[in-house]
Amino acid sequence: MLNWIKRRLGNNDLQWEGPVVPEPRVQCPCCDYISLAERGSYQICPVCFWEDDGQDVDELDAPSGPNHGLTLRQGRRNFHDFGAYESDMAKYVLLPEQRSRFRLQERQL
Image (tube, rainbow, N blue to C red; front, side, top):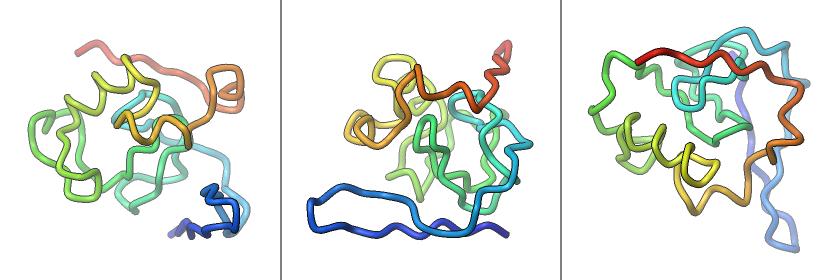
């Protein structure tokens, strides 16, 4: 299981530190980008910052503890509106022009 470790720097920027990220193979339930190495292992999506607790699109209205109690439906709406699952997290996500490493696979809900 890949674990991300957050490290706070002196200039208050949040950066990732940890092993080299395996090739993304699975789709983030929030932003629909293929951006996670595996599902349900609490990886944080670099595209939308959703912490993947294993909740999936069949549970759109269940609160997600790791994601400050937001539902997946709210996170998906916020990603559409702000570019992150929560507006406060927008400063940590990849900009649209930086997402080329990841493939978008939109779902029909």
